[in-house]
Figure 1 (cartoon, rainbow, N blue to C red):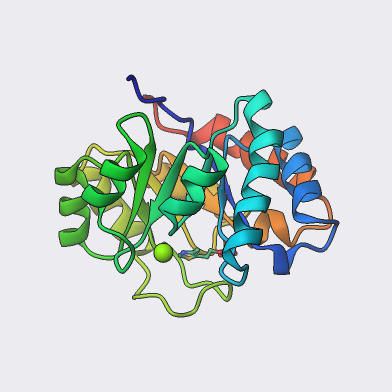
Figure 2: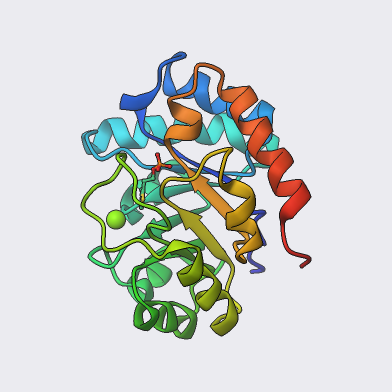
Length: 215
Ligand code: TZP
Ligand code: MG
């Protein structure tokens, strides 16, 4: 099976608790209209049943629009809702186990907080690295030290795997993140907490179109 090659450029990571303009489904629908290229369902406080149900609802919204859906942390939820893949961190299921369970066609991203973890993500065959966090962010405070733009540049020099930067990214700094070598920006609050998720997504997509490094 050939794996899809996602467009990582504007990657929405969800947080229902930050949505101010409507339900999460509303926010995701508007963000897709604005141009997000990928969505990750990341809901730490939902019970498993609700997590799967929300995943199914988002899958029904995104699949006809050709926007991939990944699930954070949980392979079982991803399989149950028919998601395109999973995003895993360093204390989640191991990449090899996720791959075995999800199959060859799934997209699997791995968060990396050090150069050693980045090397391991590339070696084991992950589809992309989540560069986490690139900047400090109030949305997630239990992170390791931010990579900063210099750290991101260093990863770009050493690795060819797609780099998705996350943490503290918004319209004011997205361009410099792309210039430092990111293939995509993953954002939570810049879209979820915006009163106008469509406009917020469109602004980030315009930056991505202008700045993304040549493939
Ligand atoms: N992982 C590293 S930082 C982060 C996650 C999930 C949160 C990013 O949120 P925001 O609001 O885009 O800074
Ligand atoms: Mg995780």
